Image (cartoon, rainbow, N blue to C red; front, side, top):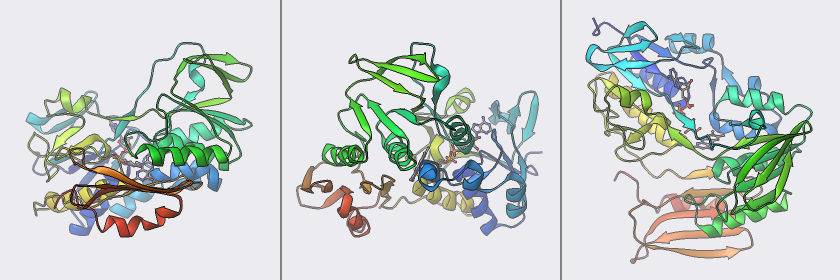
Length: 384
Ligand code: FAD
């Protein structure tokens, strides 16, 4: 029965829709059923942290609705439908009591936002923005408000800080680290971004955390571990993402930091594949667009009869902080070497070099961000 069943893709984010597009390049007819918990709008998630600068509503950021995507991709699409389980032995997806057979199943169901437990009665004012519906809700609640506090100084926290400042909001950033984007860029580059954001009027409260959030007027008062208080109308929690692995784990699939797949994007179960924010591809958990595009191209070929390994090249990440443009290509975790830094104010060129002087990674900010392409050519690809 499952041989005549469709390819089922769970998730209509960039991974799900990119894969469907790539499948159609290979095969115009093979039946594809997509299932999504959301409304199925197609949108570019990176644009969510540029929406206040550009004055874009959620509808303006959406590229197409579910009906448009169904027609464009010649697929069947079920929206507002949450998959509740997988039965790999019988090749079925479970939606409550309903059982849907698949010939091949692709998990493209993304990552969950990490929520930190907070004391106090102001929780309802805390928002996370990880999809278009979140963005719609946040934009709606911000009508008539002027002050936003952001928990987290990672890539997403910094991008929203810059974007909301550009949109005319007062912004406070609270984070336990002593600089921006620890773990992604070396401290010298993080400091440049913090300095530039401060120059735009963003207030930073570093090396501390929010301990308590209480109603205060129409907004909230945040009490920090260092004793300071911050008053805000709304709060963004941007403390990180965690690949969605629970349903996969419950179905007996191998999981680590993400759903583990090999270079053909195959999980430990026959005929089940994964890509995007939920996947750990050959040991790499990379929650960015370039990796998922590479995966969707390779997986489409595999699913249509030509088994193909994904090959990760050099994939620099651009941080959308226009006050201090930043590009980073982190060295592999096991890489041995040292950061070599040149700095002129907020312009930083940090090159991670091995003992022979080879560049294994880089972070460039400000004017040096223009060197991104040239540097990327010198860094070895992830898969050589
Ligand atoms: P998602 O977009 O999260 O899609 C998951 C899909 O699965 C959704 O349709 C959801 O409804 C569905 N789903 C989940 N669970 C179920 C279920 N049980 N049943 C049915 N459906 C389910 N990356 C970059 O490279 N550059 C950037 O500049 C950049 N900027 C970013 C800015 C922001 C604000 C954010 C949040 C991320 C940014 N990223 C950026 C990361 C990048 O956008 C993501 O890596 C990418 O969009 C993930 O796509 P995805 O399809 O894997 O997951």
